[in-house]
Image (cartoon, rainbow, N blue to C red; front, top):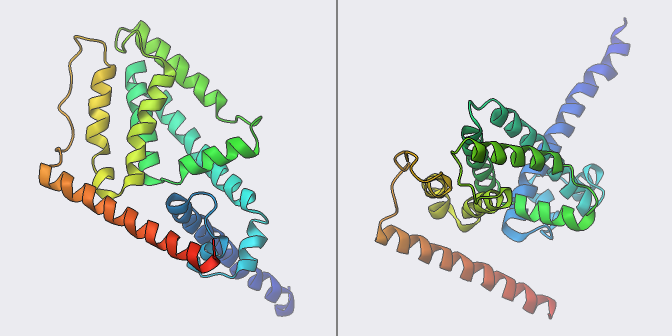
Length: 238
């Protein structure tokens, strides 16, 4: 093979690597922006923060919903990994605990997920790729109740709602997000069949002064966001 024939092939690999890196940065920045501003976050700002041109963004994601769908597909792949870990748990109750911990941690780490899931439900309400995972969790809940480890009056939707509520701490700032494991421990204690041993709660509670600082910090952030939005509205004449 001649050097002239090797040249284009050697040049193609860096281009492909750059393209992958550009896409990865777009995904990362899109998550951060959607977590802050919802799925209507500025695509131009996502491109700017990713250090790429808007044309590169549209080359990867022709429409806003294409971007949301890509984020959704990544989330589903992560969910499948969680399922494998749940299935490996030694008992149904242990599986419930793994489910609660991993999904809450997932939501805390990526506050964009609720926005993405809501948008996908509106874009394509007939598509329910996570339905099979829901059936899997329902069977786990049923078995944990038969084993006498989960309260008999708890249903799958109760569990999903509680985990989502704990996971929503990620959207309230670091002061709250750091408390999710402890709050989940309290939730799991409430789900146990009465009479079961309760492990020590993880972490420590916020002190009153820490809690007040967290609340005030959130309030200041909310005021800053409100001020920015108000300023933008005035500039556009809205």
